[in-house]
Length: 632
Image (cartoon, rainbow, N blue to C red; front, side, top):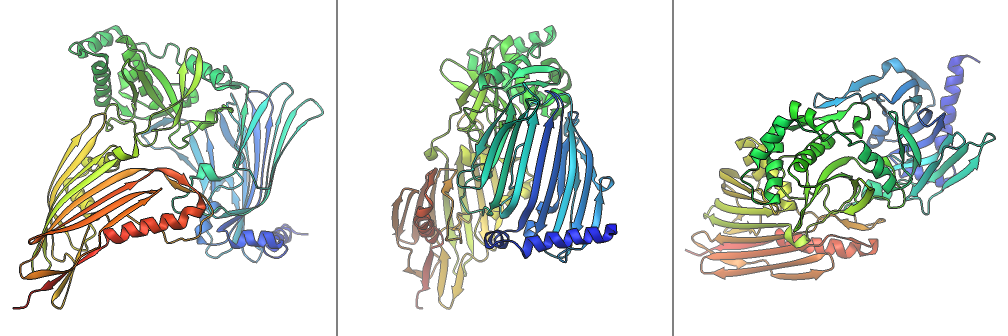
């Protein structure tokens, strides 16, 4: 049999298996998916605590354009991981092999100039003009000089992706232990088997089959809370010639603390400068703020991923000398400065994506960021040392309420950061609108946003003036509006706020039909949406609680009288509350809208009530005022 005929037969077989011989269950998986994992296999052979070989095979069928991302190949490497072998094959819907993909065709991308790193990425962008098509990748990665973690088993990598079968096998030499933890596997056909090899090897095998696609839903749980996966982590490990124990968070914290040894030294001239900088400070809090402000003015963020730099900060003296560092280096630098001033602080590892750490399963891949804890007698400060745009003492959205690992001499301990009450994440809009008989309008607005709502708006201060006006205009629900004047004031305190004072004009504020004007009640809540999807599988997640208060005064145009007004509303539900009122005082209409949305997780059965609440609020925001021209 020729090579071509063998390839063609293989392709025909793949397509035949995918679409012809699948049982009804598998056909359902394919019909509800954008892509289908036909077969994915991972084999990890650990030769020692510092060396392993990972062999991977993935065959995926792309069913439509939405699933195209699943066809691309990515492999990240660094000084510890290198791509040894690679091959790929593209097969069309008829089962014919369209082309072979060689390793030489992979694009090697080193990261941008804002990074100092030995990480690099191999990738291949796979495109084919017709659907469905199948792509198969086979590759091998060699790991040297340290294993602080093992690959995670994730049979599904994206929403709307079904899985026919996937497997994972890890083998470790006798005496070398691997722990594992399953997540989101309940009710799914995923099995874990543990055995011992003939030479005492520990062998862990995971298999998954017939996994239906997970559909993304509005206000749904995050990827991490939905997708099945199995974590693997060593107990004892060696990484870049540094031995450690990861059996508990306390032990892992001990190892992390050892990486900080002698990294917080400062030069004598800089120590003197630091004391001069804080000479007029009367409290420790003022000294911490002086250090934070100095850090913001004299350093910039650059990711450092050289060698063990992914876990160990560069020295404080190097940050001081060069003026740059990553989250580890900048946090350690701030820690060194505070230590010189006699103020203790704690190097803290946290995740910006996962709110919770697994308390009974310690592993290095659960965190991706470092901040600094400063426990003052009357208050505990959390310093985000990488973003000088954030106000001092403010706990931003990516870490508020998250679990963190405090790295102390006694080891690691999990601590939960504070979160602001929903009621304090406020936005207040006060507006005066003057209308002409032809529906032209002059608009005067003050908008004040606090805490998380401040954070959502604060980026505007770094835009060019014209872009700032565009940003304001985009939030107003008017097809024709010009921002005439804009003044922005920012209060960068522990409870920060930002205020927009602006005037706007519109040639068409509402619609004129015959002798009537139809005027919008509230043009400032354009972003409030009601999902169109009515069926639901997953719980409802409202991740952001907030309070909006709008006070809008509309001056009637000359020669018009009021014919119709929106009805007032007073809505109360477990999701939040909404109140609206409309008052008329001579030639002025005063509209008040108050919305409170409560952060929380709600059962799927409550989705109809959730949609109904949002629908009623949206109707109030989109309400119309009907004005009728007075007879002559």
